[in-house]
Amino acid sequence: MQRNLIATVIGFLLAGTVIFLTLRLYLPFFQPIAWAAVIALFLHPVNRFLRRQFKGRRGLAALALCILFVVFICVPLIYAFANLTTQAIDIITNLKHQIETGKLSLVFIPDPEKYPRLYALGKVVFERVAQYEQQIESAVLSIASSAGQFLLSRGTEIFRNTVNLVLQVVFMLFTLFYLFRDGDYFVDSIKKLLPVPPEEANRIMKKVQRVIEATLYGSLLTALAQGALALFIYLALGVHSALLLGLLTALASFVPLLGTAMVWVSVAIYLLIQGHFVKAMILFGYGSLVISQVDNLIRPYFIGGRVEIHNLFIFFSILVGIKFFGFLGVFLGPIFVALSISVLEIYRQKIAEEIYARTPRSGDY
Image (tube, rainbow, N blue to C red):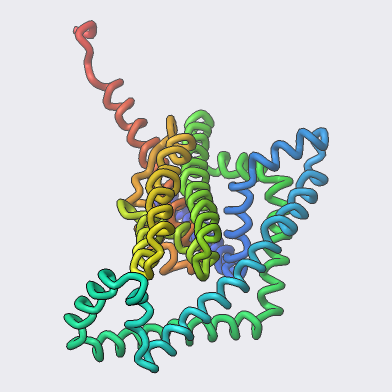
């Protein structure tokens, strides 16, 4: 008996050591593999559609989807990132110039000839905060300098590590091709490794799939839709740095309670201060009736009937994910929370069923 116990312990230690070393082996490739897994999950419906179009030829469908991904997602993202970096640096440079020349207050006070009452109100407000002007300008200047240095250093780092970045993208596309082609086989292998009966493994995998789909489509598509709608109105109203503001609106959609209103309300207030009353009112109405209401249309469509994750959990999962995984954590954080909730829910149901089965019924007496 003791010999069997020792053999079992040694077997677990050896298995744990092998798994640990294997994970260490793949750790340098974690980023491209994780990105490929997220993208494969998100594009799984497109992959199934292409398989039907190519009459079940998985390899051809996977290759076509990889090409479509590069042309319609990678290239536009690179272009958008370049524009966003340029706009952000321009805004920070202009802000620093306004502070250093002492003209910052003129940005927020409207033209006195066109809007005398609004000018008088703005002047009173700035006179009240004038005693703190030095401290405010010092803090804003420090933040702007830090942000500018960060953007410049990140841009320089990206260009300096171009070769490494290209290799990461190549590894991601390589992994993505095989996930598109053989993803079903990988899922079946994971089911066989789960220490539960086959029917329980199927239940767990289906539950996990529903939650991941709800997280990906419910949250990410909502963010994309709100960002795109916000970008449209910013461009239509001639708002400066519309692309950057559209991205910020999309990111703000993950914030509980306030959400996208943090961005478009701020832009509307700025337009109002500048004296563009019609544009401000249009943005207020459009933001309230269109941008903010998208969340009530798209999210229930994808999450309804599936396991729902509260926005608060998604918000903190994104923050923690960013802390540990960088920008990839925006996607991995909610997915890990979804996996944890799904597994806990499955085992909670299993324990409840076992307790119910052991509880004597009235007919047992």
